[in-house]
Length: 109
Image (cartoon, rainbow, N blue to C red; front, side, top):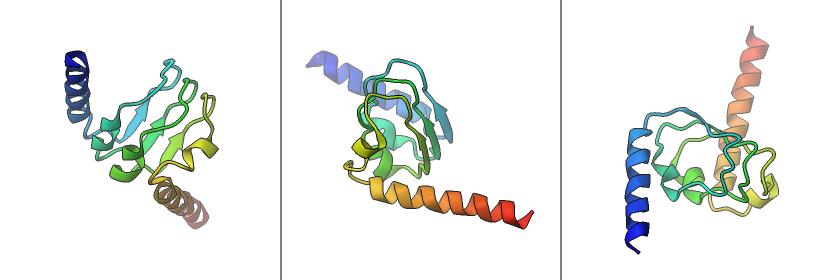
């Protein structure tokens, strides 16, 4: 239990130090999970986690961050697995809005 407390404390410290990160790439690191404190990354817009062993992502990522682009290819789970995570629908709306804005800006130039 003490080890769990130390790990949680370390996760919180990392989250605080990364609170201003907008684009995070942790691809190809053999990760099997991401910490729940990912929701503390209040500025996160893009998350790249390709090529890991992830089956899912923490709901805090979808609910508590403004993330609007997640690259999840080549993991143990699929996007279909993410669809059941609380907050995924809201993420999907943000992703579509971002894609629409990008498309609109291409049309305007």
